[in-house]
Image (cartoon, rainbow, N blue to C red; front, side, top):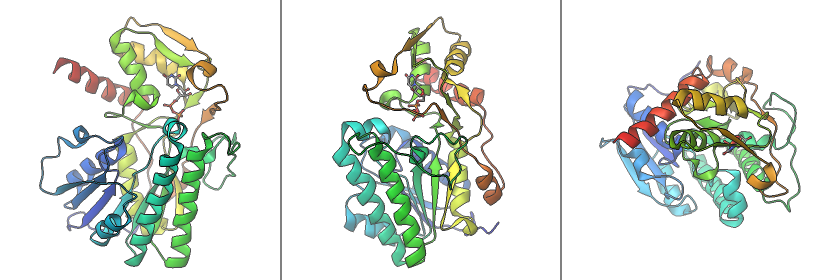
Length: 333
Ligand code: UDP
């Protein structure tokens, strides 16, 4: 594999969305594993200063600004040697609640980054999502699979569409402007610092179990997801961008280890030693009536393995323990 950078040689790295859940773990990873200077750009809409509070180093600069600010983005990208573009209005729920601002953030923000990066051919990672596969049922999802979306009258599909458009843009910049860009589709990335506020299941279940409340399983709980530890996700993200053979290509980033939501709920109860029970809530009650959610979501990670020679290693118990420990410490402290 061809590595573009020597981790011991200092570079300037721009991370958009650097105070977010995945972004802040990427900041930690780069500060720990490399000698790079890191600039974290974030508008703190869903990111949080507390995610970066343990980074006590003058190698980190935090810029509190919006990714839609074209001049500022151009300036920051011009000063960077590599760029990780993770800033986005994340999650389907946010798009449904704020469709206009979310679409603008996810479309304009990415274009601002790509246009600026193309000037100096700055290696750039673009964060995409498993949502891009839409309601495809071709499990496991491979990067070249067809995508299947619902009607534009359902704002739920706006997130998938915006991320797909970001991918098209990135690939076009690669083809026409020689931009060294790689796209990663994140699959159910979980771990410490993830908030349950936007509906994510693991922080919700852990908080319910620790509070002694029933865990709220939506539907009959037979739906499956393949959860990936955020620490695996960020080291893979770094490897993908620093391996030049990946440029101009799209990769699934995730584990291939499906668990049903019922099994997940039971395991959370066991590991927290909780007296909580499990309540099943119909999808129509949990979401809107016309909400469609995939029964199964699992990546094919053979392409990722071929490209960087590895895939996620943390299993569900390790993930859950890390999330539980973080919450338990918070309660004790
Ligand atoms: N889920 C659940 N209870 C909750 C939150 C989520 O049963 O309190 C389910 C949700 O319906 C989905 C799965 O857990 O089947 C994963 O949800 P999440 O929002 O974490 O990820 P995504 O739906 O984007 O895969």
